[in-house]
Structures are given as C-alpha cells and as structure tokens.
Image (cartoon, rainbow, N blue to C red; front, side, top):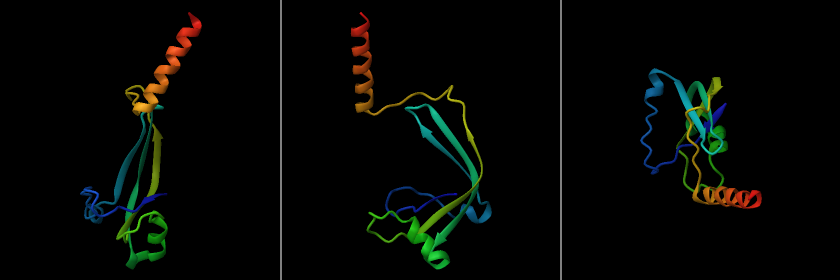
Length: 111
C-alpha cells in the first residue's frame, strides 16, 4: 500500500474528482542516478477526517504545521521494475562533481 497527504498551496492541481469515476492509478517512481524505474498500478481512495481521522493523522508529515485536509491511499495491484535502457542518468551538481573527481583521480593513478 502506498499513501500520502497532499498539501494545500503547493500548486499541484490534482483532481480527486476523477477517482469517483475510476479509481485506477499508475505511478512511476524514478531513480535517475541508479537508472531504475518502478511502475506501480493500483486503486486509490481519498481519506478525510470524516472518513478516517486516525489514518489521516498517520499520513500527515510530523513536521507539517498546517491541517492536512485529505490523504490518498493506493492499494497496489501490480508493480514492475522497468528496463533501464532508455533512462538517462541524472545527478545533482554535488553528485556530478564527486563522480568527476573520482574519475580524474582514477585516471591519474592508472597513468
């Protein structure tokens, strides 16, 4: 099961209205540096304080001070680790600099 608590004001215009007609969802979780992609397929439901206050409280980040209005819970029906062939490696600046210095260091040693 995957879950989360959307936050107001994060400019993510995600409509939960679509879940009323079709609760099927898919998510792609990317790890660009390791060139890995996890595809999750499942069924989502909305959790509110009225429907399950305890679960909504557990979904809320502990360091988030505002009131969480709703949560999304996804019951995972299937998953697949996709082939990395077409995933381009991406790194933060710090990671790229570290990789570059390691390569330069190993080149200097082998010369």
